[in-house]
Image (cartoon, rainbow, N blue to C red):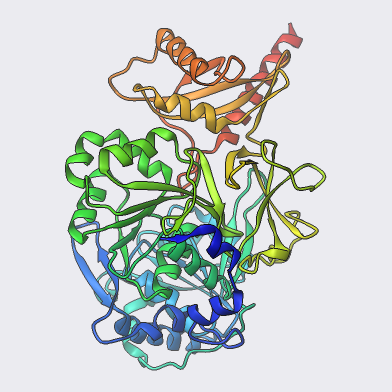
Length: 554
């Protein structure tokens, strides 16, 4: 295993570009990088498993031809290099053909998550100026409520059966067009993806991703995920979101490595079945998925123990209990990774690089990045002081975020990109996650990170999930409140609430334990599985305001 500090210190952008990309930085095409150059006879690009148990394999050569057919169709409809094409499809071969065909033309792919409603779709296609949208029949009706919906291609039944409303039929159009289309070359600074990222306020912001980001995506797959030629790889994340599109599609395919798509929703049963069927050895996904596997450990351990070589997690911090269970219950190391839509993964416990790993730490900067902790005046902080995680753009050749499309970017402060997350530098150079800046709780003068409290709660055998917020309090500024989801065999009563409070108090401190505990059936989450603490916080603020109004009225 290579030494992390040597690799990070000796990182060279020019040699990384030369060894990773087929083309020069002045002439790149994402379809060439992720498909054409790997199109050797019989080389598989996609293992696909349908929700109904059907399955298929696609080679790079097949996808090269199908992407050319789709690029020819796009060109016939007036789509050109630099234009946006939106895709709202489940994890199917048609999704991959749409992405690669869009890239082949030199156009920009814009993902739409299949759970989006009409307003979310409308905002994204209008901001991106999408010329065309590819959608499946199950979601087609949503476009009827989208003002100014672009030209529509529908993936219907087998080979295009059941297409209505005058849409183009995906498969019928592919059959009509030539399997030859010369890739359109672009520069490293030109976008090939148009992502959207949501904060706690305002509409989702458009994030253009330039072609040079492929270098960073491959670096993450190689050094942090440790994707090896002999691995069978599966990223559970949906390509409607950044982690799935960056690291279930772009990253592995750019390495010439097959990816795995499972069309159905996440379940413990389907996850175990797919891992066993395809011999998955390298798994990536979200903490939500891993917590659900832990909750079903009686079913999971007999099926998966000893089968996985490396497991990676992204989205929010892993709890210590999950980390220990993967090691003891499944016999595999799971590592925490941190990133954002705007940055890709920049802070990781690397599977392929040797460095200290401490439970609860997000890890070390991915080679090619310099990650620091800043105070409120944007000065770099020493170890032991919480501050804002930032990327030093001067010394981060793989940092690619150009700013939001068509709007000012408050995330830049001079030479730094500000993540908005509160972290702490450790003595060994690693960085530990504290929470989103607006998630950190101030109580009686103390700053409490919700993640620490949540981790302690999840250690209790009664708890499946927990979300911790600061509830407005006139005496303490905020008090720590926990929303807890229990295993079915536990009763949500005052006695258990008190037990959980004391449990956390003994593990953390007298000021950090939850003064209030509310038992809930589920926690509010984004479609990608991140807990939306701000919704719980806003709910408590609204309650406090209503009580104040009622008191004033009396």
